[in-house]
Length: 608
Image 1 (spheres, rainbow, N blue to C red):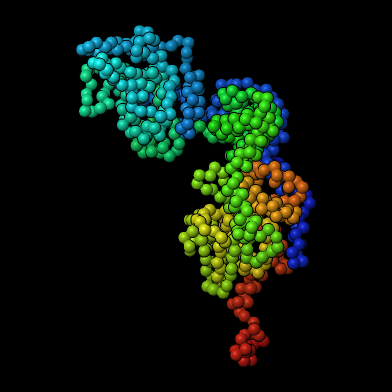
Image 2 (tube, rainbow, N blue to C red):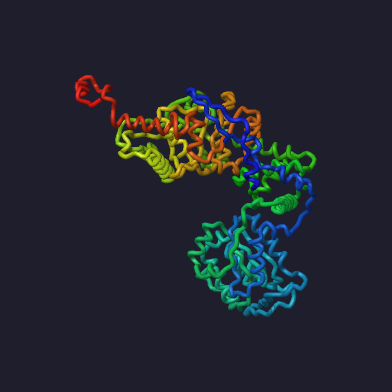
């Protein structure tokens, strides 16, 4: 059994949910241990001592390390490697260090040469000493941003005296040059000249100003180097479109953003990687109690309990901020927790104001009682310029009336709904129509809307909530407003995972908590999302104390009893499906005794 399933433990005591004399038992409730990554299984590794290890890169970035190793050996005429990676100084410096470790420094070779400059001539000879003005011992050189003069050098004339300044390509002659691809794509002429140097394996001098030619002829010089271009996927696509043949012949690899925890070996590699980042920043090794807090925050960042980040920038930020709260140059759990709590408070003005609008009833969200056709859905809010996504409950309502079977998506009609949201609506409608097994058109029309929503709505994570609201309205069965729902559905009623789960749960929890927890409030989530949980300690404590609950479901059939207290379908007794079918049948074939009084004389001719 996998580690994920081991963490998905169900509560032994069933939930007794009583509504209209109907008792529903469910064993889908999650224990508090499933709400955060299980750090206990790696506890025996947290106290181990680690030292800085340059070989750690080969373990956590095996594919990239293999590609870099091949680049240093390739006999290709144009030794080029493309690396999918953020184009930051940290990543450039990291690649420079790894490539430097792959170079044999014991027997350095001289490349390039020396330019002798006189008043009327310039000559060139091969390098004889490292002091020659254009000599190079290879090595690895990198730049985040480049200009023509910086990359190719320049010819200067001062008081009729000519001097030649070497550029980055001259210093990298015989070695490796690591450049930001976005910088080259922003200056296509630089790339064309750089490509020409690699193809011809020679460097030619040109004037930077076409209107002012070089005063003297300058001999070209032999040049060869290996080139690594790093960039994000969009700029890689631009390069592939501009240089399809060269891109297809080059080496390719990616800096992997995270590491999957399969066994102790992967976790040890990650611990070593974090230690390396810490030492590179000048900090000591973190204390054993530091790791569980970092792992929980890392799982929130990656969105998976079994996935930890390798991004040196993100890891560096956690270490640097924790160090600000350390008084003895030690990194402890208290330091990191103080840093995370302060950061959340510092960035929490906007979420607090939106929660205040709900608590002041300016945005209507019910957390008690029951209502027909109304349900609490969960949304993730992202505002441009705001550093943190946060969760907010949303009220979805559905009204049903006599009609021709049309399902109206108000968001789509008002041009506020995106394509994915519309797709989710159509999928949940298809499931409902198939379940009803109608021989004729549905005699009801329905209207579904996100109440008090004034901006575009997209995504299918509310399709489960919309379906439950629609069923509630058709069956005239109220929904428990103490619960909130998130999840998408497919055409077979299976509940599919969604994103932003931690923020969604915490958004509803904070509203319930500020209104006082009743012990019967909670959130229904897809079972496939359990592995993505890494909730704030406040929520975990509330679940452990029985003040708040989470349920993990795999099918629509499991959500409806929790929300309405009535099962969707069963062989005997009342159920939601039969209630809806009976209501439809009554609409299609009304009881003669219920005809308007002017037409009741027709009852005399009605058989039976």
